[in-house]
Image (tube, rainbow, N blue to C red; front, side, top):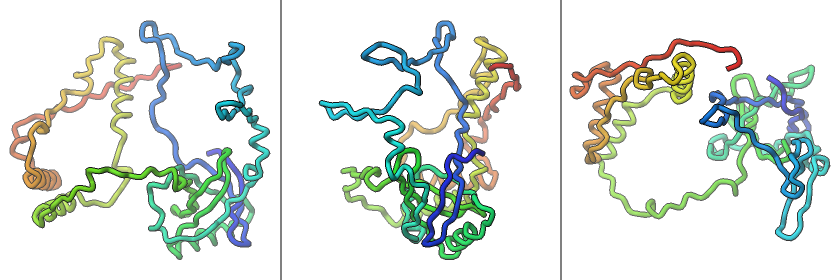
Amino acid sequence: MRAIWKGAIAFGLVNVPVKVYSATEDHDVSLHQVHEKDGGRIRYQRRCEICGEVVEYKNIAKAYDDGEQTVVLTDEDLASLPVEKSREIEVVEFVPSDQVDPILFDRTYYLEPDSKSTKSYVLLRRTLEESERTAIVQFSLRQKSRLGALRVRGDVLTLQTLLWEDEVREAAFPSLEETVRISAKELEMSSALVESFSSDFDPSGFTDEYQEQLRTLIEAKLEKGEALDTQETFGEESEEEGGKVLDLMEALRRSVEKNRGKKSGAVPEKEAGAKKPAAKSAGKKTRKGA
């Protein structure tokens, strides 16, 4: 990993030098646009509306237009702002972790100690662990003032940027103002359904099916070209019972029975005689330059 920023956590009079790394990455297959007719690559040009010239990225500046005047802001202008020059991650307060609404979480970064002694880093990490609190911090990164949360993940301090309060939209739905009567039996069956799905969360048990199928499709097209038969590659889609409108209690009851059957290995009566087609995966084939 490559550090994207260097600074220091200001923890009272304690200074904790750190390097900042992106903690996540995109695993999506990289696709680009082409002309469907002949496969030619589609490219975009940054063209000036006044002189008509194609402008290189290094010569592009930002601007603010109030409707009457335009103010051009160069990279040097933006870098001159006092907050942009700051390399300090200031701890503002320590709050109970459950008070930080997950809807505020944005990007996550790893923090690595950036000094010969890691004592101050370990001290802050241990303090967060034992107090069961989250440190709310303020800092500047990539030409923006940021609000963040310092948390612990294993032996590493993580910095999660937070959305500002006015960036979270209010959920005002008239339909939720209606009075709805939930019977004790419905609540009991719903709780039984939740119990039948209960488990300990393990993110490694989940996969991005769309990306897996997309890779299978790409490999199959590399091998078979336009002769590809998608039904042969992925198998026939099984028909689910989704068209019927079921009573809520009946839907809950069937859902509980179905999930309990899955966990016990039993096959539901309606599915006992049906064969589920297995998806065929095309053999892996690589091509230089692809």
